[in-house]
Length: 332
Image 1: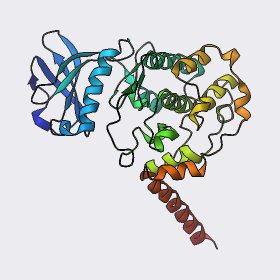
Image 2 (image 1 turned 30 degrees about the vertical axis):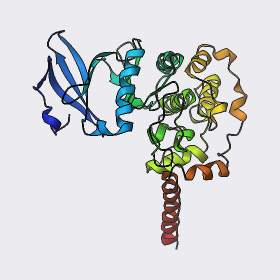
Image 3 (image 1 turned 180 degrees about the vertical axis):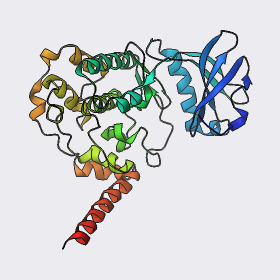
Image 4 (image 1 turned 180 degrees about the horizontal axis):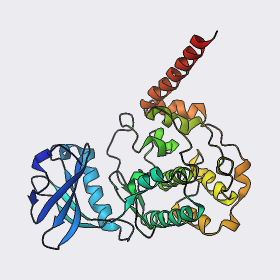
């Protein structure tokens, strides 16, 4: 629960016919709260957008996109947009409240999921994302924190804050914009400054599937920027070698989903879902194929678009120097 009370938003405060129960999250662009609908007598989620930030073209576009995508997607695995109050002193969106606990909580409590539970959760989230991709929506920030799991192990996807729809106009400058997403789950093209598409979501799903079965994501680093660099260069051990009970078809599906070059992944979540539903038809040859690092020239060309990559490289070098110094210091 948040301790601050931005814009007077606090438990017990009424906004129109809603009464705030508690503040859930406060980010750079929005404040999220759980509230009670005093008219409809139901819990809801309210997302308040900071008025001063809406003057920024990119932030306002995210606001409009969130509204458009919320109205477009009608699926039990996605929170529905119920109301939009754009003209209020603090603009806000009212969304359906979804019951469940985050996949992150489940992974914290259960180090490695059973194969049975993994299959149920992976099929559920792939089905929801297949629906999104069919409707031209890319989430771009899939991670365990954004997946809710209900009592029947059905997955519900939340926080479409940086999602894009179809060929929506880019509202940020490529050379000045930071990559969007969460480092542990960012696809290489996001690290390189691209906007991403369905295959970007496929990559994030593959990373989560790996974590659900191995107990940790394939690329782990003490610093986020170092993790980002690993997505471009490091090798992920095959899942069936990390955990022997993982069937080869599942390991092969995950390996294809997290290929560095997006053209080598499943084209969208629909293809990924089809593979999960037809394990006997999965091509296992990918388990024996190398996934070479991205070509140095491609990375170099994208340094200008994304200066954070320079910092990532510096972080890797600093870590290596530190390790070398420690080893040297402890030598007899």
